[in-house]
Amino acid sequence: MNIKSQKDFFCGLMFMAVGVAFAWGASTYNVGTGARMGPGYFPLMLGVLLAFIGAVITFTALVVETQGGDKIGKWAWKPLIFIILANVVFGVLLAGLPSIGLPAFGLIVAIYALVFIASMAEAGWKVKTTFILATVLAIGSYLAFIVALKLQFPVWPAFITG
Image (cartoon, rainbow, N blue to C red; front, side, top):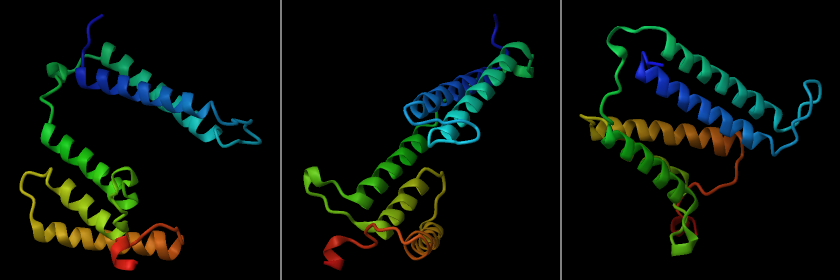
């Protein structure tokens, strides 16, 4: 069998893998029935639906002829590394890393770090625009998570708040 569209084929495989992983993870929870849904019902159905969509996309990539074959291009390593690094740094700054003695820096510092590191993935990023975006996201996150939802996690670094 010949792959007609590489992009769709590998996209479908990725959808199927993520869907099966979600469905498998959800099966460890109480699923319940349609009338009395348990905590695992929604993730299980979502995983099954995602795997089904992936199977349809993969099948289409094997059957439907596309012009040019939709070849997969080169990997964009710089954006990939910056986006992953931004998320890791956000988690470390938000919660700290007690195993090496790094204290929690709080929500505001973590959001600024996340936005600045992720913005470096863009080809022509500007510091002023990034600073404005980080400020808007920090204020919005503070209002949503701390004020509205009343979640309990550090907002500022521990060495400032005491």
